[in-house]
Image (cartoon, rainbow, N blue to C red; front, side):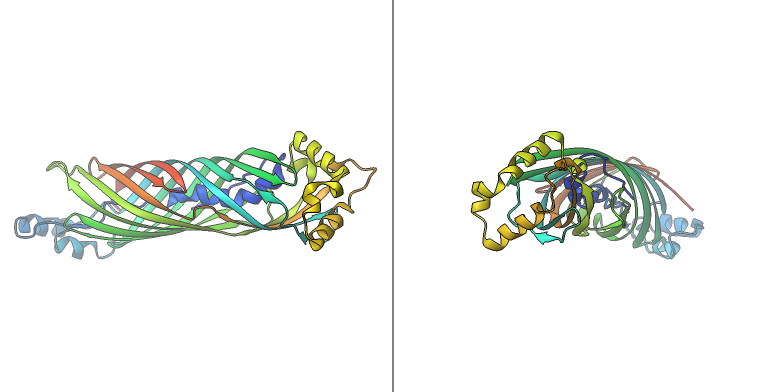
Length: 350
């Protein structure tokens, strides 16, 4: 599943802090499984129909499909094309910040604190999947997204940076599922790659999802309704580093606030409250600034460790199986990471 180029030319520094985490939001959508897991039917009441379906089965996939049909199991059509739309919002945590100015050494600056930071994503993708075996589905996906990242710096200078950022992503995944008498369970694992505009290497995101559900027949023509609950966990590369001009990192009003602070920073209450080694780190960074050079021309080097504020969340979902070809499903993520998904799925034989 996820490579996005998610950053604008302006307001880049704090946005870049969160870009890889934003990708995790985007790639969550790929963790949507085909909940029409294999269901056992009444063998005694339908033995003739089972034998007829098995004798007529002449498709390539899934492998061992004919044997499974002969044992009285019902299976979805093996291949599927999915159009998926999704909205996600989640908190981001930032820690272990190191900064350098104008080529100076990176120094830890724990004295810089952050408020609440978040990523919000609207995304759509195309996913193609195949039941390779009756219990194993493989898929690939490609998508586009419109994301917003908002970062709040609390001290020593309070300001907010909010950036809208388009992008794209791709990924692959596997789903293992089984079911009997209408009950089913599935576990899904996928990997997404994001090629960010201002990062030197693609960012990898890993999503793991577990779902437990039940399928309810609605009529004798194959229409069904499935409902499920589950959990999802997202992991994203935690370290972001690079270099950026301060004018690209902050909006003009924030640069002015930093300029006013810089002119008298040693007399500020914030500076006086630092330990000696922290004061030395701040002095080292500011010593690289030239009195004759505008502050916005400064270059900042950074190394930041960040994490998803809510790596695990709950899931609830419904699927309406109109017939064996067409399915519509929706799923919501709750607690910490909030999301809403709509998926239209067309399935076919091969």
